[in-house]
Image (tube, rainbow, N blue to C red; front, side):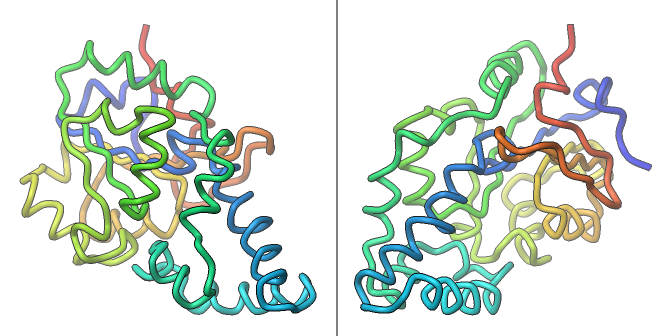
Length: 222
């Protein structure tokens, strides 16, 4: 069982929201990492793009869910690429998911403490805030790099609770990453929702183990 999306906001004191794939369209990140990075890596190192993709996939798979996986400085160093510059090059692709900005604006009518809780590297967060202003909607912003652990790890949640003193039973957390949601559940967060459509141009996906909504706009109350 999980929270009823229709009443979820009225039964919590703290709202925690992920950024990429929850508020902002994950299509941007997918384009950078699945298209641009392999192509530029192949070009820079003089290897076929298919080989570059294979090499990058192996590196990413070995680090998935770890802090380095989300670190632009780490990837820039090991790939010998200016990954930050690649992100800026296509920043016109950054945007809110349908209804997400309107949802954030609507939160002003609720007596909630609203937190952005993201694995995003601070540089990526800065780039996305420059384009969308996303960080400006929150009472506080927490990144995994700031807290020293990825959201997939239990110490992240302990560090977050040390900083916020939130009640896990009275907090709602929304994310598109099932591994992150599982970690939050293990820590004791009772109200968890999964985003089923993190990429706007792709169909809704099936989510196992959590109540799923198409997007955060489904939480808007009239």
